[in-house]
Image 1 (cartoon, rainbow, N blue to C red):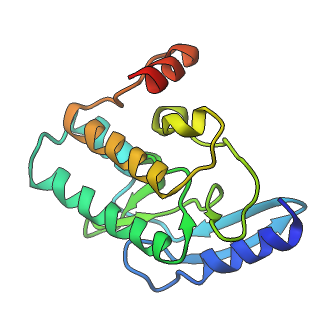
Image 2: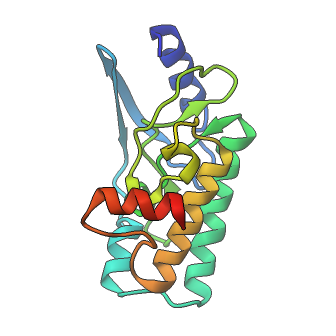
Length: 174
């Protein structure tokens, strides 16, 4: 992806400040072709830690609450034609009141401006079509959200396995 495109994407993401469910940037900087984003401390921790502490959230009001707030956060991105790109429990921080804040926009892509096929993502939350070489899309964000819901209810990602080749096979075939 070219330098200008990365700067435009960065500006698109930064414009999300003051939006519910998407944590505003405290500051950001770029070094060569890398962007670094800094957010304020979220006293509620991340969703991954919460899931692991509670084993699972069962199909209860808490799992539904987080699911809806994550969905609303994705809507903020999608309404701006941005694919979030790496939705996973570690990128979902909780504020002191327990509300969702999406962070880590490093894999986000503006649909209208992006021409690259990119794969960088966390394997367990990667949609089958992305593993088969297609671009990430709004649908792949929703795939990841479904996997997160499964993990909140069951306590483990649906395709988790230590063997990455098996994980890819399971995602594509199941």
